[in-house]
Length: 384
Image 1 (cartoon, rainbow, N blue to C red):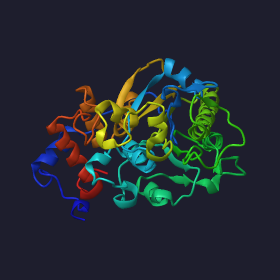
Image 2 (image 1 turned 60 degrees about the vertical axis):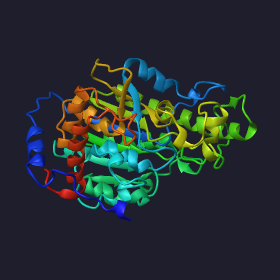
Image 3 (image 1 turned 45 degrees about the vertical axis):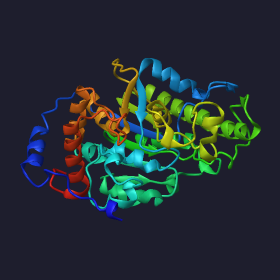
Image 4 (image 1 turned 30 degrees about the vertical axis):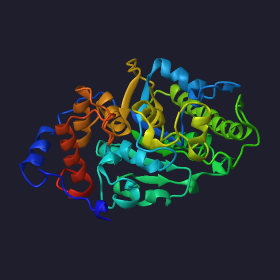
């Protein structure tokens, strides 16, 4: 219980914090366009072909790979594994890091209880319509309240989908892409959408498909069923991304699509799918080396747009950097914490973690990050 109490960091009540805000004062931004920003956080999206000693009937994510070749892409180091989706979402939308909260925290459930700067509030202040979409219950992780604090104009939950297709008892990823397209067709100005899918949620030994679009061989029968189920969901996710990109390819409206996973899937009890295949040597996270940790907490992402030729390949960053990176890349206004993150990125520090051998922040920059996050979540001194 003592660890649940959030104490202000050193320097918050003296000149240190105000000096930091002065250093991060927003500069005048000149941009010729205000593109639509479409963020899609796809449930458990990951590349199952990274598992060794398996044979796949076909590549489950060919379209995603085709985008990786010609557009900005890389790996996100996410804060969760197998669940707690909203913590990755929290990092992307706010620039905050779960690693500065008590271990086991769910930020949406515990700490977001007042207006909080986010991608939505920043872009709304720049004239954007801001819409959140999630193909599940609106109360899940308190999103119905949190999205209001983040300054989304609207939240479209499963109730907004008209006669949707269900896959594995969940609204399909394809239906989420269709809903995004509807939102764009009904919009009158620049649009920011943050969409969260549900179709490929675990467990994968339940809610099977009528057919396996991807079949995996060379493995024990029980884990094969799990992998077939999960990989079929990845194939469906890949198709949903293709539908979305093909729609925006055909229009003149400048648009950016950011597609990423929230965490690796939970493939069987005690990470069985990872140990049986040889992807992991030990199921106990306490014994994971740095490489094991990064393998289990890294998800692929891609950033596609229909108006730019600039490409950044093989990027690697914490999920808390993703929103800041996109705003910087497309010359959009930023919150102080996002400007700070982009400054640390110029120093080569793009991964923040409570695990020392993974963390790239200097002690001084970690202190500054803590000051900014505390103010956003608990202090209220900083600009909103």
